[in-house]
Image 1 (cartoon, helix red, strand yellow):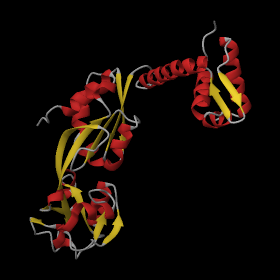
Image 2: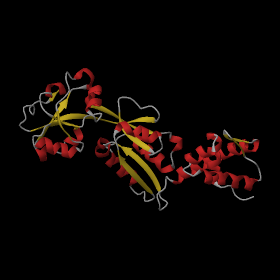
Image 3: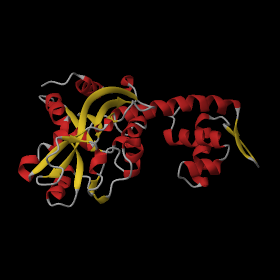
Image 4: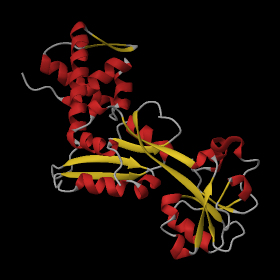
Length: 298
């Protein structure tokens, strides 16, 4: 007996599930005649009638039911095999896909990745810059192996572990009326124009997150996502802005800026590292997860 053809099994499974060759063809991006030909060739190969054709569509024979059950298992095994191979780069090295938000990439990952990749010539990491709200979905869908996001609580649909904490502060130019304040609530700065990109990214999401700590929305003059660009805009007097404290300190002296501590509860953020399931990770991805979960070193 010749080996079973994977595309033929795919169209056969689709025909059984859709109860129609035309709908199966549409699902598999084929013309109906091509789908019908593949099923007919499968029947000739096995010398068995697999589908009964009638005016309402198709339905499997008893032999077809058995093949459908086995074919589903075969196709699932092929899918898992393809996913496993995709964990390696084109040259055969182990490859890990990691998604993280900009704050994580700048503040925390350089030290962790430096330690993890030291001496590992057989491992490569694809690092994707994404928003926190989108990262758990990418992990749950299997688009990336590991994700790092910030939230008040672990997100559903993925397995999350505490990673790091940080604080955001308010950055103003030296000489600004607020520059002499050591700390304040954001409410006290609402008379001044702010540069956008807040915790939770969009203004609407931020206002929902901040809750009753603000009596009115801030006056957002310009949306600026890049931290360095935001600080440069602040230096030029375009507005004041919220920046993670550890990142802001890199620009204070060089740009003539002051960092004020925000007393709002939302100014402290919890980051989580997440995976779909530790059991699904390849060796290199599992090792990276362990490196990310290791206690922070000085």
